[in-house]
Length: 229
Image (cartoon, rainbow, N blue to C red):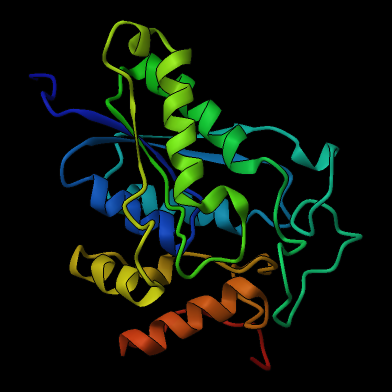
């Protein structure tokens, strides 16, 4: 069998709506190496969703990296003693995980060097986002500059690209783009406090953004909610 001649990309895949859309977008031009993290988050439902999405969208490979951001705490997503807000809050919310995207991108950068990938694709969004500082365009630009300095490929003149195709899209735009590419959003889990079956709370910030996105897109919401939501 002849090896693929397509360029390669490492795609950060959480199992949520945004990262699934990113994988579908990237698969049009790359052989995709999906990378997920068991980082001490509240539930494993999103990792099961990531596996489903990677298989359905034809990722060349899907790896799960295990690390413990809960060891440093500081976030409602990694510390069960901190409640997940169920109403909108001001400023950077407690669901922000300190340095999470920097840690994830660092692993993705190493993985990209190993598999000789041309790009890293990440689903950060600066429009319908929760106020996280590591979802801003200037952050992505800064990481790309660092990556060019810190890697063998960068020193040799072909640095890996950091692509954030959802950066300036609304949640509605993202959903519509994904549907055109055949994404089954019923496979995804976005909720910060989903149950063991992947059912969403319908109340957290992520759920509210997701629900509003489907409403604005004018398409049925396939999200499964816990009873009473």
